[in-house]
Image 1 (cartoon, rainbow, N blue to C red):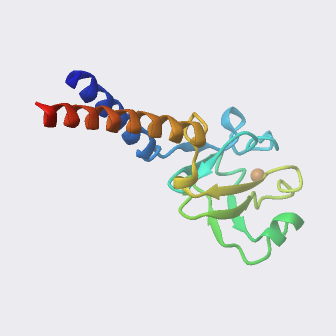
Image 2 (image 1 turned 180 degrees about the vertical axis):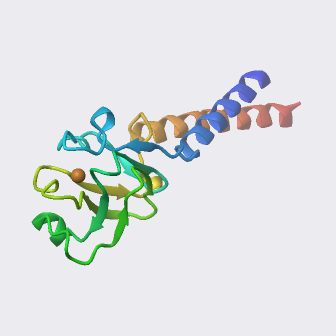
Length: 163
Ligand SMILES: [Cu+2]
């Protein structure tokens, strides 16, 4: 009985620790195999979740491309003569996603932006990132384990009082 109670408490503690543990930061290579080139696929961000703490890695030949962070309006218009919010040109540029919200990146070389070298990233709060299982079922699982453990503990306490 007591060992079962300990097991339940341990299971609850492990489940809670797993759910509360922050997901480790991910580094996304922009465009994956195509990287940051004219072959950059417009669908690259589809199915990806970006959270605060993650970072983007722009890989490209530095004599052919660059990375400019621009406003949404300049992004839409592929305007690279506007007020750039940031420029990178090493060919191996790490850009930390340090805040929640939208950021717009384009290549500032030639007409590359209109040819598709443009990337909108939406960064979410890391705390809002869902674990593999849906939060509702995970929460109720933990609640279930915890209440079972509590019930077992009170049963043991009651039994000890009767002794
Ligand atoms: Cu380019």
